[in-house]
Every structure is written in structure tokens, then in C-alpha cells.
Length: 484
Image (cartoon, rainbow, N blue to C red; front, top):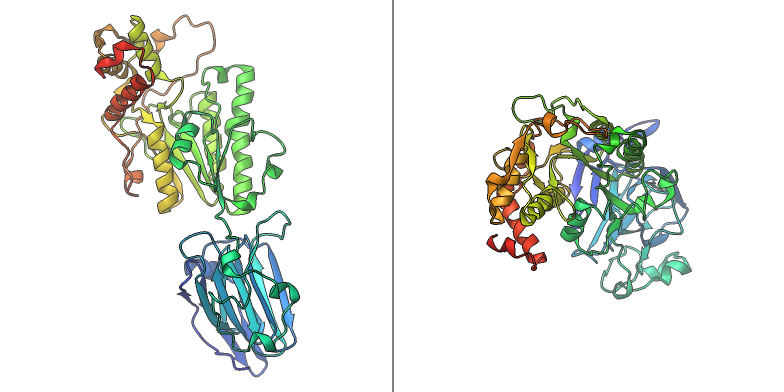
């Protein structure tokens, strides 16, 4: 066997997306040779994803012509040769436009290949005593989805160096189906938690009923439950979007509320982060303006220090810290969320229609954020894959107060905005008998980092008008909405 010594470490893309060949430096002398078969830091520097191998397998083949495959599993592989030489053939068996694509090449100790999840793997030994070795990032499971293709499939038309009629093949491999009968490997799933809340409903509307999208309410999957790590086969998931949260900011100041808020917003998020880290999952976690104390002059950026005022803000800050330990994370900081269900805008519209003249806080400043913008922004980040980290995501436009938003709701629904009376937060809650959470007076978030990724949310005043129009259409009996 002749090995090419002294090659530089390089990577070469193939015709199958994600399938990448690596030339490996092999150092030899009279004693033999040495190579770094897998070197995480160097491989990542060349652009290989950190696929997190958990097992190393070796297949020894004592005869030339031994042929194995074509097997597609729901995990990634780093394939190399310790001794000998192989002819390798890979067929894309993933559900998608490249299904059936074929790539072939030879591997010896100086070459390796990264095989992404769902790409069928096969090889034929070209020399005796060939040791074929591979790292995988999951353990075999009877519950996982596998796919197989016949080595002699006419559509793939692999040009085997040694005719299949002359080589050693298992009966099981000979019985694999032709391409037309192969069950494609589906993509890893996206799990959306909090699917029954305002944001969860918007995410459902945005993502629809694609088979790889899974929705879960707290009844379906409670992130505070001790059995969370074993509640799903985590390796089947690529992304977790955590739209669940404890949001009763005032009740969080009570003993029972405090316990519930910490469980959902901090402890549960820490459990999700551990699961995501262990299984190479991207964790999207939705945060809040309440992680700031609201004393800053100007817009808050993602690098400003957090300093929450009350229990709710403290639990959200703790959840952010936990989510940030996951290597693949997007923390979405947002404010003043409006979507389907009970919210401030609906309340003001109902009061306007009923002839009630409300008193509304006028010393808290920020922007409304519509759940449609949050859902679209999350989808954008997961599609374009900018740098992991924290991103502010609110609607755009000039910051305003809750009182001014109330006046806009009255005006847009054909009512006199002068019916709104503005008061300070202190005056508004004067005389309250139940605990009241402190509110940040400035909730305005800077959007430059998000916009640099190519996504700009809609103007909150335009979205407000659109939202009220949709509200009017969904409630035709409410005639006073006719002016929207």
C-alpha cells in the first residue's frame, strides 16, 4: 500500500450537499506512519460542523472485494481508513431535491469523508486487511429511522471496481430495495414549545403542518417535569423553539407565583439547554425587556448588562443565562407582545367599544411587538444561520408609551383618543392590594444586530392598524370597528 505523505489538511465539497472529503496529513518514516485521524479544532477551522461524536466503530475486512451497504442512518459519520484502501459510494437518501444523487471516491489512510445524516454509505475493499473506521454522533436505537438501497440499483448505477457477482456481500445487503422503493430519511424535526400561547399560535401559522414540525403545549410536554430528558428521542430533533414561559408578572411576586415562575422560566430552560447541548440541537429561547431595569437613556443593545427589577425579570434573566450555555442558541429579546388571545390592544379596543374611558400608564416607553414579526424573525435566523447569540426583536418605528398606544387604538377604531387619561406607573398602581411587579420605564430595544442579518420587522403602527382590521373581520357584529 502506498500512502501519500505530507499532504496539507484540506476539504473538498462533493456533489452531495454536506458530504465533504478531507485530505489528511500523514507523517511517515522507516518505523511506519502517524496521522491525526480526527482533530476537532482543525476540522472546525476548515468549516466542518461540530457534530459531537459519541462512538467510534471499526470494521475489519480480511479480503479484497468485501462490500457493505448501502445504509443511511439518522446520524452523522466521520469515515476514514486505518489500514488498506476502499472504494466508497455514497447516495443521498434524504427527503429533498438531491434524493438519489451519487458520489464515489477512494479512501486510504490519507483521506477521510464526513457523511451527513441520511446519506447512504457503502464501500468495497480494494486491499486485504482493510480496517474501516467511523465516528458517529448517536448510539444505535431500534426506534430510529433507517433507510437502505440495493448495491446493484440501476438508477444509482455505481461503477464498482470489482463486480458484485465476484465479491463477498451479506444476504441482508443483497435484499435491500431499489431506489424507487426506498423510504427517504426525513429531516430532523423542529419542536415548538408553548404552542398554545400567543407566540406559539403565530409560529404554528408561520410553519404550518410540515411533517418535520412538532408542536407541544404544556399538557403535551412540561419542561418543568423531571422526566423531560427521556420524554422525546432528542437526537431526532434539530431545533427547539421555546415559546413557553410564565408571564404573570404581578403574580410572580407572590410565594406560589415565584415558585412557578422560577420553574418555568429558569429551571425548565436549563433542562432544555442541557438536552440541546447533549444532542447538537439549536435552542431558540424567547426572552423579555424585563431583564433590564429600564433606567438607560436610549435603546438597549444586546451587550448591555442585565439588571432585572422583579421576580419575573429575574427568572427570565436566569433563563437567558441557562440558554446561553448551549453552543447553538438564539436568545430572542422582545417587548410588549401582541398576538392572538388576550392582550393590551384587544382590551383597549373592547373598552373603546363599550364606552369606557380608561386610565393608562404614560411613563413606560417602548414598541409593540407583533407575534407575526417574532415568528418570521425566528424563521429568518434559523434559515440564514447568522452567528449564534442574543438578538433584540421588536417591531420597528418610533418608541411610544402605553397611553399613546391606547389613543392609537381608539383613533383607529373610530373613537375619540382624548378619552384616554395618562398617569404615572406609581399613580396607576396606588392603592393596589395585591403584589405589583416593578416595570422597566424604558423598554426600547436596538434592532441593528438583527437588521444586519437581513431581517427588518414591520413598523408597529402599521402592524397595529392591520391587527385591528383583522380583529374587526373576526368580530363582524362589532359595528364600531367599521372605521378601521
